[in-house]
Picture 1 (cartoon, helix red, strand yellow):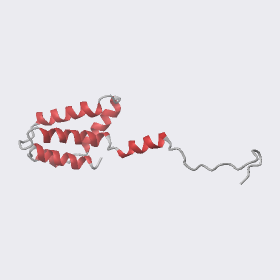
Picture 2 (cartoon, rainbow, N blue to C red):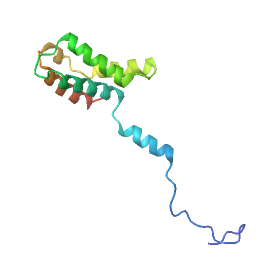
Picture 3 (tube, rainbow, N blue to C red):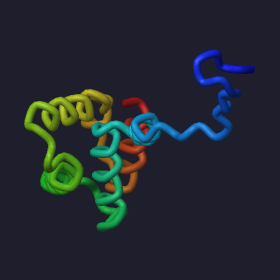
Length: 116
């Protein structure tokens, strides 16, 4: 088709350039949420160190502190607190009542990470 103003055919866009913003947004949405990453990293820590032993309160605190330092450092405090609250809310209260090994807790944490 001829363009009246230019007097010749307007070339069609054969290879549209990818939008860098759209690509970054796609990558961001493909990642797990910060809450899920927090739970997954804590689970990795529990499986890496003595997975057959029972999980103590101190062991849970260390796993959570390491996950927090690794995943949430660099984010504003409000974002980090919200992610931590969502992660803790995803844990079933029945988990705290039963005595489990660190490896069993890691499985439960990975399952909970899939819900947030």
